[in-house]
Image 1 (cartoon, rainbow, N blue to C red):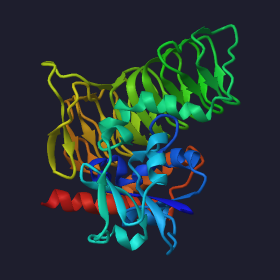
Image 2 (image 1 turned 180 degrees about the vertical axis):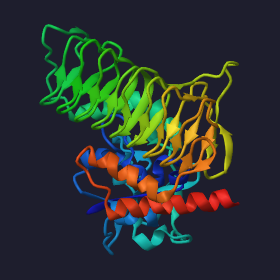
Image 3 (image 1 turned 135 degrees about the vertical axis):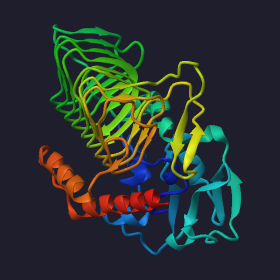
Length: 389
């Protein structure tokens, strides 16, 4: 098979709000995105097919000849790739009844397109699948360890201002670490290209600080934690993933959480990740349009791209925030905050939201392009239709 096509299956809906603005395979877990993992594991071209409003920004032109189609929520492992190599024509692999892989053409992604294919349910132990946002922070430690297989050539040298426990420190070119304590006995620590660990940081792995990211002075990291590219993080962070270009620059606690890109948490923002009764946490599910049991005792904040909150914001356990929300006020925000919210229950004007998004990206020498605007407008339209019902 000459090409692999990663497509957005049913999990795309369950991974909202993170997937409002990206295909599932562009989610970061560990060091790399799922797409980057497939490209690192594959000797063939890996393409992306996504939902219509994302296709112009992220989708590739899919050739007419047969390809190997794989659900973009599946993380590549040696055992699953071996299973794909043995996949026969007219056979599709399913997980919990949902198609996750088949050989065929793009037209066969439509309803009824795989009629006549024999379904083979995959053994649950053969795949690692991201089905809900909580899976990202729950599986992040394993993902960091697996991704480091592609970085074993890196050294872990530190100057004598630092204290290192263990021997699983991996540093890229241009990484800076000063006067900090790093414990890799609890898991590996990866410091990406031109990333910076400022003075007085305390890090327990597994931990990944991706390219150009900054850990501010005195930060406390309890892994597994990933800080995506060009993000700035301070305060206390535990068991969380920040996709990239986002800021949590001050004191405050972030735990068992996932932040999208271009988010900003105001100073002393805190997230609850454990209920007082130690019960399982319910979180908003966009597909069901209702709160569902996450199956997790520890579950913090899920925040979509371009959302921000004011200083001293207090997020309840299991809060879900959509895209481009501006959160402020003296009370606890609601546990579900739709996209383009202003305060706790107002509406953010689209033109103002786009203006702020452009200004924030310009600060990183990037541009809010036409495709980015179309995506945000599509999310705004869907949100307003939801509010009107």
